[in-house]
Image (cartoon, rainbow, N blue to C red):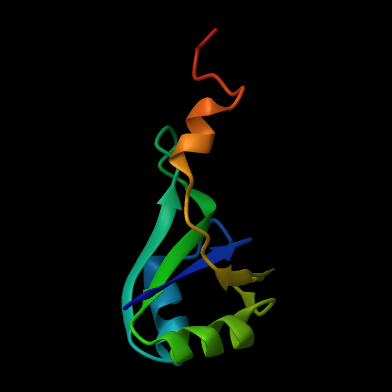
Length: 97
């Protein structure tokens, strides 16, 4: 089972290739996704990585958290499950003004 990892505080210039090379030092990388802003087509400054091996993922999280990448100290942690239900029931509205 793949382990999903959250990477925050990324430079807007950090690419999926850079992230893949960084995490591949610790084990097999199943996927990398830099999250992009739809309107500007620019990175939002965070990404997700899936690693095939749980122990490799734990080691990568430990070793890469607060490491400097492209001039920024990145934040690395296990990704949390997204709760779509809580998001849709909150006070946030997608209504445009």
